[in-house]
Length: 301
Length: 314
Image (cartoon, rainbow over all chains, first blue to last red; front, side):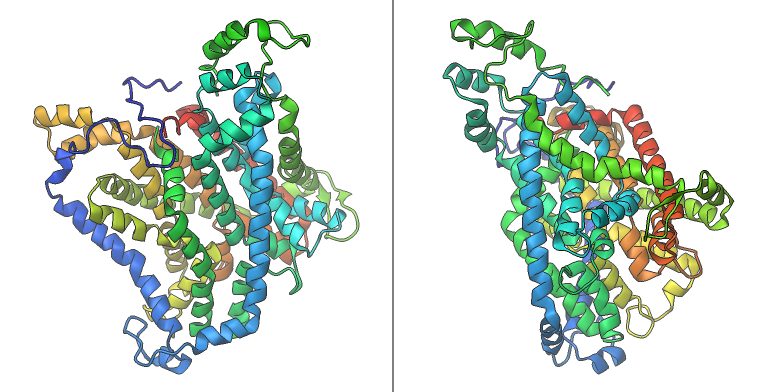
């Protein structure tokens, strides 16, 4: 259907580094000349990105009465951490630990189920494994919104309503399609010769998975881990509909409730938004390469 | 969609030939070499799990659309009632139109900006790397957090623009388009950046020798070479923009009036506010049909089914 007319040079198979085409580095002469228009555009976008973030940080450090009189774009005159204290004292830790439990469980389930599945899809010549792969290809298009009513029925019948499991299980299921696609993509790049060599040595399929495929597919696996963790961390619809009480409440739902709890206390509201972003931002700083490398691969065809 | 593994066959034949005397003793089907290959049953837990929590509910949604159910007791079959109601509902027509409009506006806005930013960021100077890292930050916040952030920034008493933007239909609609763009452009920029980096350098060198300028190069090389990337991004964007639910729920509650009540929001209201789960299921089924229809068309038209191979060489 889509045959490339031009042969693409295949970059060397390194795992963690970003894709570097096999041409020596001093080659981008055409980008060396300044491009004022693009430069200007990128600065404009920088402002679009940063102004709301700046306004949020600055307002979260301002007392409520000052926030209502001052302009949110002017720097806070007497910064205070009161808003953060208010949020932290209103059960934020509980929300955070619930969310962490959900994220870790979702990642474990997604990886535990997707990895063997992708391995089978790549390594087995069974008609069924091809069908399984197609199922997940189509699964990418199922919007979670569309199945939330029947899921509500299922969750209620399973007696899981208002528990963390009610959030974990559907979230994991809906993180699977993309994970399977990414893992199949990476596992496909492990060369057949290596498998053959191991097979000749009498290795079992399990051993090949853990001693060959997994180490070679580290890049894809980290993408899947980060992506499904992000999805679990940011999920809103499933917690909104499948939980009710304070016990299993997660961060996003807690934020949503702060709107009514803090009412017009917008600085406190913004402090809670900042706090909710801190853990993800920390992970981003550590795992930036894996995340960006994995997502960039989606576009490189 | 193509067969799952057209490129693998030769390697497998080789594997069969080299199996040699060490072939396992157990009986094999014709032409198969099971040496060191996992049993297909390994895929079963994943398939069952996904089927139970995603595929079965999809079928169930369709079934429930033919019933009346208030969330308690058991669903009661009512035939085509919900679907008839759906076709007669003026709000549904408005909602569908809004959803389409929102998707189209988001596509234009996000694709143009993300494409330009991505191609620009594909260059390798240091400042670009740093800027790209900053550009990515909004994507890390949850939709809920972003909706709350703009809820505060658009508040007429507190915010940056002290006007009641969310109180006007156009203002609320544009706010949702903008917030979606703010959140998702970073993601699409990254996709385009990855795509642009894979364009062979020789093409630009040849064009430069022929005297093509920067803009000529962009339109004659970069854009055509990025067509698969544009497809990938478009599919993700279209399916994704059917789900701007959090933003609408937190920011406008579908208002003013019903002027931002997109399909998922209408479904949520029918189900979890009015407890009319049968009708909600009809809307949901309609949403599934729209989404799968759209993706199938896009997949057919563009070969998105090849997505699995897009990471080759990473």
